[in-house]
Length: 412
Image 1: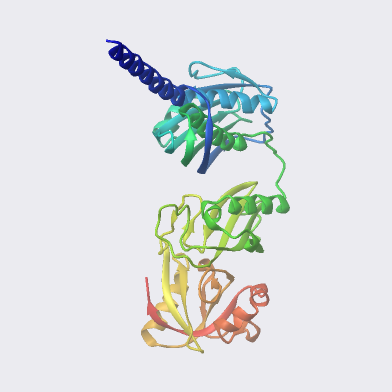
Image 2: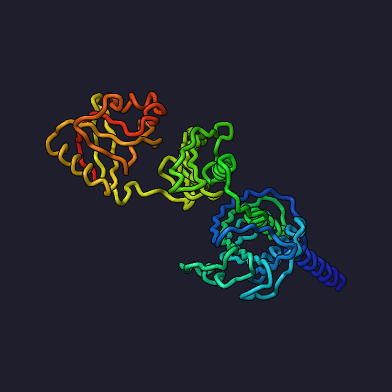
């Protein structure tokens, strides 16, 4: 009888220990672990008129959803914003119109595989900022609808999405893991908010800094970019009338593996890979960004190899080197001349203005400037593509230049 009692007591003690241990991992806050976290975000802005916005001393905040992670997002947002001097007015429900600036955050997708020793997660978060507290477009943005945004004069809307992928190894409670995810997401959101929105024109130097930061934080460079190789190599100046306060910056850098974007889990070659990035900044915003003219850094996808609205001709110079000429469909006279050269095999002067480009020669003739001529000024005649390559800046400074060549193939 006594042995049975001892066994029962021991069983109860084991049960209590197991329950307490499980409860500790679920409800207590402790972490002895290391995390690998990758956060990518995209932000769209909508503004009307000249405006200057700073986050007010009061900011309405609404975090949509329920559960442990949502609660951590609320508390972390409150803590971080108050740390920057903002009085947070946390709202329990979403209003269509707040009295002043508002920030709305929603978890669009939450995949968390929790294990006390190894945890992985993938999140998608939407954040929405309104300078006048109008949240009318939030539901449309959340559902992914294509809407025409109309806002009052002097107001600003920001809509951003961020994706977060995390793996954590070591001993960690669920509450501590939720806080870790919330801190990573909130830090990215807060960096994107308009702490100071300047109406004055952004200088070339400031634009260069914006472009450099964009490249440095791009998924391709963050994955395995070699910081010591990142270099600004050239600035292009578009026509002021077409693109005011606008610059295109070219950067070169190297990565330790092949490929583009965040290549976690992908099969890649372990080889030093050089890249050239072109970033267009207008009025302080990155309007377009590409790597090697193949990868769209904003959409994070490969660029279509053939550009609609262009004809393509393979033109051979006197040295036997060949270059693909893309010709805008608006240049009908040039297209007709190149087609005729293809049919007759005749050599003519083919040219236009040149620009940096990722190909064998490092430049191309601009598609909307292509010309075909039988006679040209001698000072504008280059003997070959490689001759231009050797002194690109000189030839670019001449404006329209020509190479004597023949069309060996009509590609498109």
